[in-house]
Length: 343
Ligand SMILES: [Zn+2]
Image 1 (cartoon, rainbow, N blue to C red):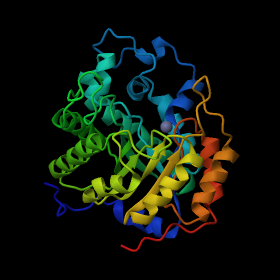
Image 2 (tube, rainbow, N blue to C red):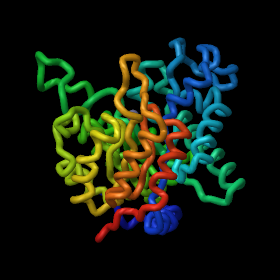
Image 3 (cartoon, rainbow, N blue to C red):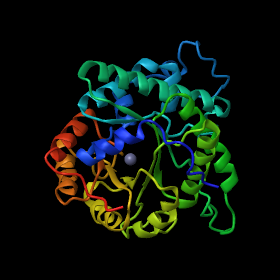
């Protein structure tokens, strides 16, 4: 099923070397930066050079901007690269047929993923040409808005809004686009349902077999409540055991309740995992308006603690984190050695 005899992508060796030398920096939130541009419905629709073939309103469909406002998305990636990010996440969190159904853009997912990878690649190369530091592009795969493990209907606990195979097919289309667009890695993130993640892992390896190359895979769960379990009910240790068969480049946590609440769960993962550990929290808890209030210094101080304790190999930011947060995080972890892995 998973073919480990495929050749590894050329980025794996330099990434492993980098990980041995220092803590790797991931970028921050796309959505917060998009908001600063104040884009209108017309902006989201674009100038018509990409034919949407959809009558749905598109404002809020941030992934579409890779096609209709590529200059905006490239600028955001570039700002994160210049802030110190080694790895840029593509603007493709919701670029599956399942998530794009809300916008009538199921037919556009391949284009969204190719464009998402290409625009991140352009920003990476621009930053690299200026300062000589290699940047990598991680094709971002979100959880979709449906869960394969839990019924959305309280009166019918056996019901599922999506099957493993639906997810496998949808993720497969997305990941093919991400590979064709030039992604270096695949990042399966914000996992609240491990069965969804397993479908994404399976689809990744099918896509790698088709492409004839195995990209490094980063796997990142999210803790959705204070008891420290994912929505599908797993502890961090159980989560690791569910995904270790994929031999991920990194495993970790993102989003969730901010860095302070994430710390014990990252420590638990760091204690059991033979992969690199990756943590990219939100800028604290959302306030009553759904905004994130932690300053770059506040978030960076907490992520710096993860590094001081030797828990992490890759760090960055999720919701509410800006290029200033990423610069502060990069600065806060710079003097600490990366977590050592025995395997
Ligand atoms: Zn988040």
